[in-house]
Length: 185
View 1 (cartoon, rainbow, N blue to C red):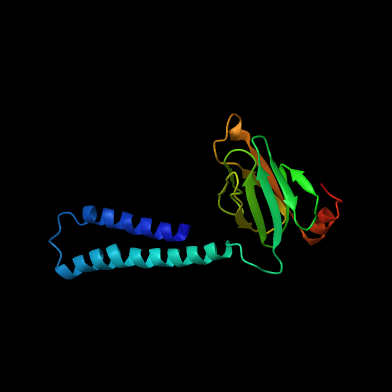
View 2 (tube, one colour):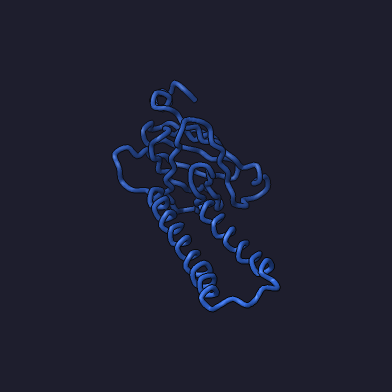
């Protein structure tokens, strides 16, 4: 996406500078004008934007929660002071402020709230999705590598909302199994 935007920006800047460089020269013929206006002013941006749209659709499709054998399901409940996370693979197990997931596996997060609207957002893993009282929204996230990723509630939900954060810890396969057995916190 950044590459496509850079190409369009470079083209627009070129088109902006060229008239100043050509100042004082004799007028151009109609075919040159058509090349610049139609070819580079209309066709080029449409091709680049179509490619970016196709790329966005492919990436977006991967984020949709679909049935699969290797999907891990967790729950996230927002409250005014913290997020509480539950794990389908470890019934009765809950963590507060830290979501544990396996790395390199898709994770469906069922997001809800006990009080006001919150936003569940882990910028490095997926987009933002609202937690709405009485509803469950599902967001698919996936960490490419083990590590800790910062999450935030990006919705104004009262005093102290600007520090309403949580962490996502992505484990390797052995670490995930150890977490499910209760050996790590």
